[in-house]
Each structure stands twice: as structure tokens, then as C-alpha cells.
Image (tube, rainbow, N blue to C red; front, side):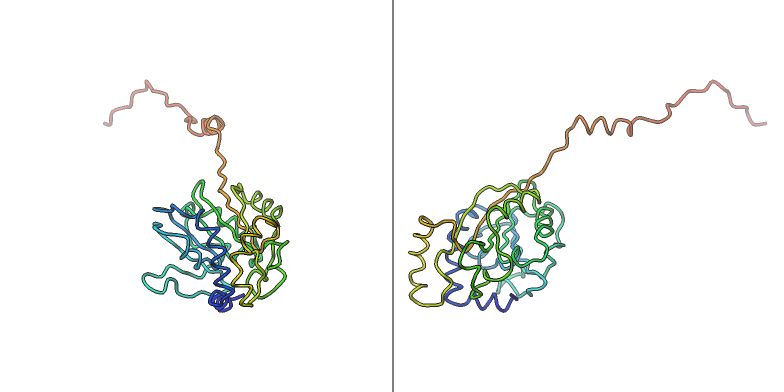
Length: 247
């Protein structure tokens, strides 16, 4: 899906219901970000607007194959078109990364997560929103969750472990069917409540929170390794030979 399709979807009634459902799950986990630097990747702008407040800085990166538009509509521009495997940021400069409509649409999910790991600060947090392989939404193309590669929880766990992330929590959303009928959309909040209690594994979307793993270097090994390099190769020896005076 490109940027036009995503924008049109979130402007529809189904898109608004999707946004309410996901924002309701993300908002409690993204609260209290005062003074932090937040990066959205994919199509995360609706959720940055709904769930993030008082952040030190916000960036909305959109993937090259999707396209980009100005965000926000007023004020300084905070959006950019990027290669998801080569982000234009230095290492360890982002505190929170929110990836929506990104992981399932890239051709290189491992490389993408490694790049997110690179720009995250130590103990930085990653929030992934992806289509659930077992859910109904992955089987219909009436929403962006019907495109790309869906994931199961074991698949996500393995992918995050390989890219040096540790899972903190799991959450689910989108239990109502991806239908444009008014009756379904009106009953969406009630269906969400029932679905989360009766069939949590059959949600349309999986939300996972993970933390960046940073492995320490043992100080003893480092000291032993550096010792030979810091020791002079030749010790200075004083000489007793006198220099002859010039005539």
C-alpha cells in the first residue's frame, strides 16, 4: 500500500474505528514520555498524534516505497521519506520507536529491526503493531492489515530475539471484523471488549513492546587486552657518553 491508500483508509469509518481500537491499547503504554525522543516508522502519524504528548522531539519516518506527506499540517515539518534499513540518524538517539504498517510491508524485516536497534538508546523501547496471522484481518484486503506478511507471536518472538530485543509485554486489538457496514462499526467497541476476554489469540493485530538489549564488556578482559598495547615497547635507557664539543 502507498501513502494515498493509507491516508484514504484512515479517513474512512473503518479506519477511524481501527484507530480508536489501536490507540486505546497504545495510549497507556506510551504515556509519560515527557522529555523523550520518539520515532514513528511506517504509517505511525495517527498514533503519534493520539498517544504521544510532551515529548522532547517526534519524528515520523515513512518508507520509501510508500511515499510521504507533510506532518503535522501546521508548524515545523517532522516527517521524512527514508530507507527503513538505513535511517538518517546517529546511533542511540531515540528513546521510543513506534512501528505501524512497517514490519509486515518491508522485504527485509531483520535488517529493519537491526537498524531500529542501532538508533535506539540503551534500554530504549520498541512498539510493534503487526497483523496477526491467526486473525481475520490478515485474510481481507479491506484494510492495510490485509497486505504484506502477517506474523504469529512465536515468529515475532524469534525475530526480536535474533535482533537483540527482549519482549516486555504483549497486547491484542481489532476483534471486530474489517467490515464497512454501519452495524458492525457501531458495535465495534462492544465486540472489542468481548473478543479480548473470549478469544484473545484471534485478534486482527498484535502489539508487542520490547526493550533494546545491550551486552556489557567484562572490564577484566578489556584490561588484559589493552595492557600490552599501552606498555612501551622499549624502555628509555640513560646514557653516560659525553658529546664532544664543537671546535
